[in-house]
Image (cartoon, rainbow over all chains, first blue to last red; front, side):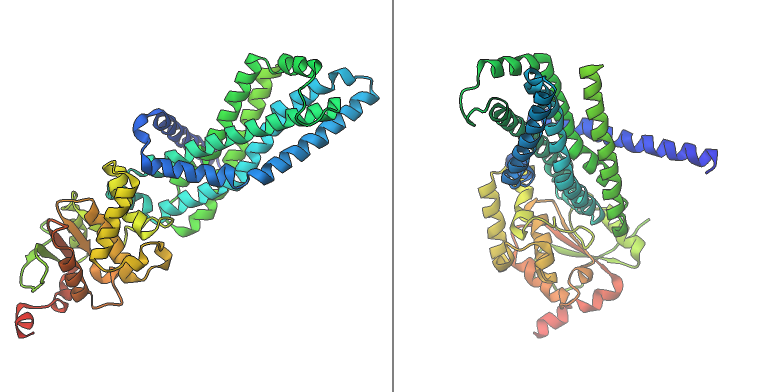
Length: 261
Length: 170
């Protein structure tokens, strides 16, 4: 590849990310604007939450509980072998609650919902549906796109919150042999309070919010750049998913660096 | 470029209908460009695929005018009743035939109450029908719901439309 072609390619990559960031800005402003919320957009938000979070809720919770149970059991077993049982709960919270579950949640939503959003918006662009809406007096960004960002982000936040609370309940059972909904022991409460202090919770909240924005903004931003030719639809989804993967890794590594560096 | 001409020598029963005869594609495009404030009904402006016919029509007053969902759906339903096609109200675009799809697009344009409705290339929208007569009957049933209507068609299709003489002889 010639130097000129390489520089053009790098320039195109930056321009693509620039357009996604611009859409992220539009989406955030739209989310905070009261004028976005009317009965039409609320219905789109509800549908998005239903398809992203509610429809998968039982299966997702079963998966999160199983992962929590397995990992907690492994940590407790290994900690006992090494005489480090006192640290088992702290390790479980740091690894499972703060890292693995939010990461698993976002991957789950990315595989299930982001690919679908990318495909749907790309087809809307290709079929000229967005332009048809605009010419009818319906702003497609406010009606079709921003509600997907709101619904998707809310879903990631909700699923992460539920799975982490579930993981804490499971770890209480595994570490202390307590009943599932028994009052936690003083040790448990002390360790949870120590690990999940305010700065850690704020960082977890920011990371989860960034995950939520990424799984919606990136597929939509990529789909909006799709040329109006049907054979570009799979290319758009492929590009969107690759960008999303790198964004998720970037957010996760960034959060780890802030926590432990 | 003067792209279009208004033709009145056509005997449509529906009132407020004018014709723009385009000699070629450039003139057709110019006619559309000249009517930026029109409610455009075109084969290139599809319905929203994951909404039903009723929702496609109702979304305009609901979103644009802040009408509540029930009232907007009621208004869309009453328009579908006017044209006698409530049976397709809960169907989505892929399940519609060309006439139902055209009616949905026309009602979506009408419900927005633009100063003029612009139907472009009706032959492309209604390929399996005697479209001049169908257009006339549809617009007649919707009289009072639109202010004026312009039909953009190619000049070579003009003979397909009813002439004053044929109307009188009928």
